[in-house]
Length: 128
Image 1 (cartoon, rainbow, N blue to C red):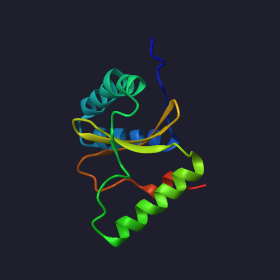
Image 2 (image 1 turned 180 degrees about the vertical axis):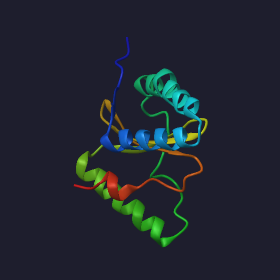
Image 3 (image 1 turned 90 degrees about the vertical axis):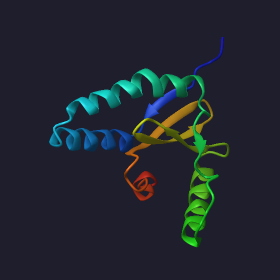
C-alpha cells in the first residue's frame, strides 16, 4: 500500500478562507463557500494526499520580466533555505488556484485565490 502524504493548512491559507467566506456572505452567495469547502475536503486534499506532485510547478513558469525573474530567484532561495528538496506547486480548481509547498512527505497549503485575483501575496507567506 502506498503511503499517503500529510496535508497541512498554514495560517495564511486559513486566513484566505476566512476572507473568502466574508466576501461570499456579503455577496449573498454563502453556498459558494460551502461548495469550496466541499471541493477542498472531497477532492483537493485527497488528491494531494495520494499525488502530492499533481499540481504544476510554480517556479518553472516562464519569466517574462526582470521583476518576475528576480522574484522567482528570491522564492527559490527562500524555499531552498527551508528544504533542499522542497517544491512550490499550483493546484488548479474550478474557480480557485491553490499554492502549496511540497516538502518530503508533507504538503503545506499556503494560499488560495479566486482565479480572478491577480496573484499570491508572497510577502506574507515568507514573513518571519
